[in-house]
Amino acid sequence: MTKFLLLFCSAVLTLYFKVQTSPSDKNTYDIYALKFGERNNYVQMENEAIGDKSGDSTKVFFMYWLLKGKYNGKIILVDAGFTIDAGVDPKKITFTSPEKTLVGLNIKPEDVTDIIITHPHWDHIGGIDLYPNAMVWMQEEDYNELVEKRKDPEAMGFNKNDIQKVRDRKTKGSITLLKGLRDQVILPAVTVFISGSKHTAGSQYVMANNGKRNVIIASDNCKYYRNVTNMLSSPATSDQKAYIRNLRTMKQYVNGTTDLVIPGHDPLVFTKFKTVAKDVVEIITE
Ligand SMILES: [Zn+2]
Image 1: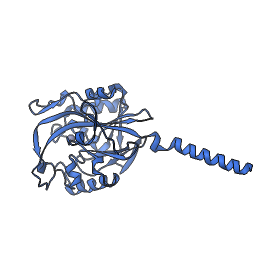
Image 2: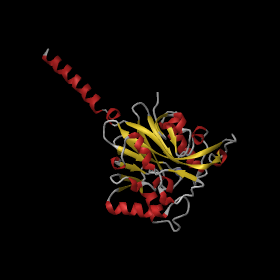
Image 3: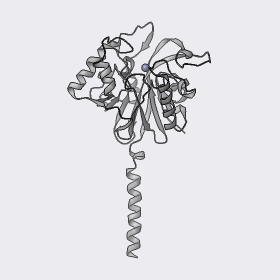
Image 4: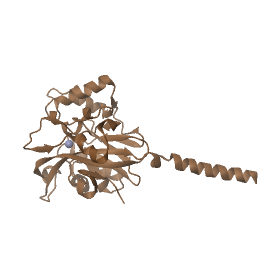
């Protein structure tokens, strides 16, 4: 009888322990997309998804993403948007400073614990200095491309002002350079994948769980939903076949639910999901 009781108690304890420590419980995230700007013109979809025959056009939104730990206290941005020093032409682009959109979620810039940079183009990295306490995570290959290898810092989507920002962070120790692993858990149950899409040398995407499903923050590894739904490459890559291969991989990670491959610039993100504050949607799934 005593033996039975002991066995019973240990089974209950094991179950309790599992429930308490399951990473899928402890390290799930409220996942949001936040829009802070847009281009004033429309672009033709055939110029964004090679082979598209629809004749559709689309707006280009500028956004970033937020993973708010439900229990673990982490406030993680995926990308940082851009600021006034990007020098955009107001006739072409309308924007507000990206941290202002956080107000709708009652988050202050100093609350942000981490920023994962998908790639260091001006519209994704320029805002890192808005968040004084954040650790920045980026691929070493991308860092080198931005900082060391660029002869013309204004070319191909890079902004020379961003070079000093990442250099300063390296001096201060508030940047972590990732070594190009296929997949790597860098924060609690947050995985980054080097994409091989060749949007930039080391462009990466992020996967986290919203409590029900895995969500992929694809950023410009899938600029529009049309890229992943129709398996069409963006022209913004040096290897279109690799871009498509990576679209396929991301789709597999979300079990074919392409809505959960969140693209880098698509206004549809803000109609597919529930608006929870001005210019903010929560990536919630049934
Ligand atoms: Zn972009």
